[in-house]
Image 1 (cartoon, rainbow, N blue to C red):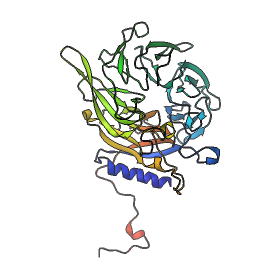
Image 2 (image 1 turned 60 degrees about the vertical axis):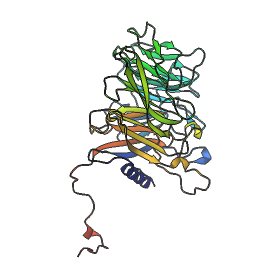
Image 3 (image 1 turned 60 degrees about the horizontal axis):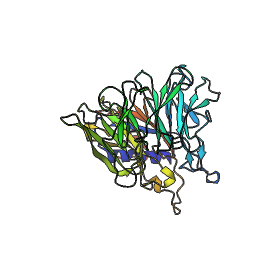
Length: 438
């Protein structure tokens, strides 16, 4: 069944996107997925970790994948179970809202940073011991009741990555928090810069062109001072992300990118739990006053919970990759029953030409009258999306994990032109062949 569904995904990609000589072809490969065993409360739609990270776990020069409590050893994707704590299942969900690779203790081995809000209520780092058969030690680095996720970037400008925390709601005693990476234990120093914008979704990037890393939220941005660890961060309510249906919970991360190539960074933002994907165009008037204009990229698709930028088509410019979660909030989100999808966009100065990685109607599958067997090929973008060259062919592949499983979409490049000799056997080798053109 897997091969048939994969074929459907490929056909949809050809029919629904603009196919031309430079169109990259993506070959989807399922690495792992949930076992369909209803008697033990496991189904084709989860629970399964909705986050994964890409890192060289064993130091052999190949990129491996970590997804929740398991990591997968390349090139054959050997599964190593329960290598760390955290990421526990909580009914139908997995307590792994985000994760990424980071060498926290600077020993030359990539570690994993992860967050969760159900049982973890905060963020941890898991130390890579350098041995395959040793459990990774977990250490708490942040506590929060309303924890959504963590992202990384050089916030203080010292050349190494720090961590920005996201809380999905303002709670007394909490605030917009970032963790300064330092070169000794406890490895991080916590800083709270304010309470404005303390809601679902945030991001890192330079808004005002001063080469400092600012913090963006769905309702404004924090301007980084010259000394981010010592001086006050100024909040600017220059915009407010608005949606058409329900609340405006934003994607995590929100992305900063010069969309229209006017030398001013703009904001790309998704609606995490309702319809919509948009970009906010930054403008400056003659007096230097800053403003943002919201432009819709999508209004008919929902649950753009995560996204990433990277060059997929080889033109040297970043493309946007995003997609929909499967049964977010256990099927309570707007558009839950509509098709799941993974899209990439050629930004083209703001045109955002959409291309398909995957698209199907499987969320509607588990009806009582449906007598088909459970599907085993269900690519759904979860809460962390990765772009990396997994097969070392010089092209970015797309790696994501959702409730339906862990997938790599291998970027094989454009179809060659002219096309070489096809691999089909000659007609005369078929026993049933009769020449029809004589």
